[in-house]
Amino acid sequence: MSIRIIIICFLLLFYLTACSNAQDSKKIGQVIGAISGSIIGSKLGKGTGKNFYTASGTIIGSIIGKNLAERISKADMNYISIKTQEVLDDDGIGKKYSWKNSDTGNSGYVKTVRKIENRSQNCKEIKQVINIKDKTKEIYSSACEQSDGSWKISKLDN
Image (cartoon, rainbow, N blue to C red; front, side, top):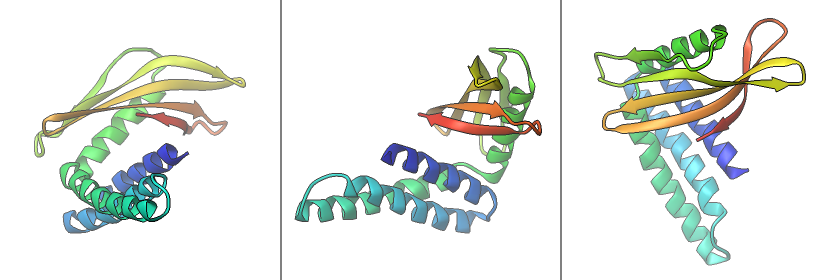
């Protein structure tokens, strides 16, 4: 359960940092990272040890959140969003929709891994690969098409 909360928090981090300036992005990243870290920390240890892990998780999470917010820009998030929508609109499987931000040097791609039957809905498993500085992040998610033609992400896995 806590992994899902963390993923949701980091997705929220990316969403909120895309809607703000660089300084605000760092602050938002720190706060969301601290919340995620404290949730993880609170699940570790017992008694006074639990307090230690919660405090440590909060500190470590805030550092990680700030660093993530510093490294991915609003433009990067826009590229990812556009390419993800292109993949969802494409009926094919395996075609990579690549993006590169010449300002940040960040790049990546999105592709459909497979189609999924889910209660007569059109669903897909998609893979997003994001290269930020010297690190690569892979995110797998499932998305199902809604009756109005929009897509809803129903599952995320790192």
